Each structure stands twice: as C-alpha cells, then as structure tokens.
Image 1 (cartoon, rainbow, N blue to C red):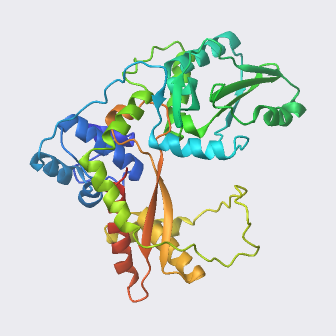
Image 2: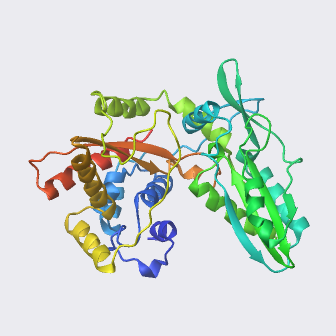
Image 3: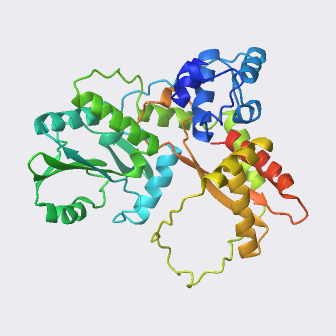
Length: 393
C-alpha cells in the first residue's frame, strides 16, 4: 500500500486493497516505477503485464508472495577515467546532433516568471551546486578513436547569464538565449536571468536532450528549490556515467538477447511508409517544422472512454491507440501501422533521482484486419502493447 501511495502521490487512506492502479491515476510510466520499487523491496520480478492484468493491491500481493525470489543488484559505480561510454539513448542523440550541430530540435528550454526579491548571488550558487551535484549537466561529448564518448568537467566555470532588459526587450532576449549547443566544448545546460522591472524577473533555462528528459526536468526543479531554500539534499550514490557503463555491460546478457530477438522477429518483414492524403507535397529533405493542435474532450466523452476501457479490461491509452491505428489505416489504405510511443526508460530503482537521457521510444506494430470486431482488435492491441513494454531495451 505504501509503495502505491508513493508512486501515485496519494495518502494510504485513499487506497484500498481493491483499488485499481489505473483508476487511481496510474499509467505506463508510473507502472514502471511501481515495478522497480517492488523489485527493490521484495526481490521479485514484476512484469508490466501483471500490473495491467492484476490491477489491484490484493491481486498483486498474491502474485508477489507466490513469485520466485530473485537477487536485486544495485548499479555499481564505474571506475574513474578520462572518458566513459555513452548509453544507447545518448548514442542515438549524439548521431542526431552530429547530423546537424546547429539544430535547435533537441533543445529543452523553459522559463519561469518570478515576482519578489531575489538573492541573485544565492541563485547563482544554487545552480552551480546543481551542476556539481548532477554530472550530466557538466558532461561533454566527442569522438575518440572512432567512438562517441563522454567526459565529466568541473562546475567551477558555470555561470548564470544575467540580462537587464526592459519589458519590451524580453522576447528578443529569448531569441538571444536560445541557441545551439556545442557539446564538445561547453556545458550542455545553461541558465539565464532577465531583470525587467523592480522585483520582476524571468528565469530561463535550456539543456540538450542528450543529458535530460521529462523526469530529469522534474528532478532539477525539485533539487534547485531545495538548494535555494537552504535544505540539504541526500547524496547521490551513482551518476549517469555509472548507468551507461552498467547498461553497456548488461547488453551482452541473455535477457537482452531475448529482447532483441523479440524486436527482430516483430520487424522481420519490411515496414512500408504510410501514404497519407497530405494537402501538400512530402518534402524531399527531412524537416522538423511542425505545429500543435490542442482541443478538449467533453466530460461525457472522457467518462465514456474510461468506462469502456474498464469494461474491456484495458486502459484509455490502449483504446485511443487502437482508434488511432484504425484511423491511420483507413486514411492510408495500409493495414500495417507502426506508432512510436515514448517510455521513461528507467527500469531500475537506482535511476529514480538521476538526471540524464533515459527515455526510449517503442515502435508498436499492429496489423489492422477488417474481419475483426473492434473489441477483438482492442484485445490484440492490448496484448501486443504489453509485450512491447515487457521487452524494452
């Protein structure tokens, strides 16, 4: 019960032994966190499909009691050296960086509007301590002997960029602050503070995706707030370089071979690009230009989706994924549809408070058959999705 409460951000009193993990707000990312904590606490392996199928505390407790006990191994620290290997996720990001070093596509910017008196010296100290605490923020990337590697530098030269601007100049300062990263020679993380009026500030930050992801941003915001408030942070036992070394060593284990075999079998046959009815020609050169379309679902529609998912023994995510693949199939005329879905990539309890690039994309492949009823197709999508999540590399 305590593990559920911690993962879901609830009080113990809000959870009963018959509460559904997903009806309480759980999703695939929090399910991974739950599996990691169960593995660490009870020394058992808890596949994601068991969380999706068993759903409540009582059923999962029975599974844990009856499961075989395994050894929980912490991630070991790697020996100190000049350079360290990249993780698989970092390798992908470094390839994209090397392809176009001036691109801003993988910058992760953000800003906060601040009111009130700010101690700029303390703010600068707090960010320098943050960079010192998380090695990812002071990591440089380069090629050595034909292999992309990373090295850790110290935090002593890290500076907060200070701007004194009028309110009308703030947008221009955003453009000045937003620039590409030179991953070989500078910090992959930068911070700026704009003073526009008395006790009115805009705090800017930016980092390259090769050293951060969505969960990392939450960790950084939490740690910065604690540092600025004068609170003491617990020491980090390992750093991202330790994870990268551990991952590369584990890549040769039998379990990783099993995961690879799953994906190689799934994609043994060629995948054809969807021929969608664009209202413009597909560009010859790949472009990252795009846009967002935001809309709200009516409350009755959301309630109906949740009730339907519950009745089918699946999640709203799987229902929407099924609808989306059906739509893509009908628009393109292709029955074979592949959809990429991001996952946290934090498959070990030791990774919870680390800053780094862990996120992975699962290529979910589904074949839309016109002979199936929707609930039959939904069941197949659910099974394939759970199998993909259980074979994350």
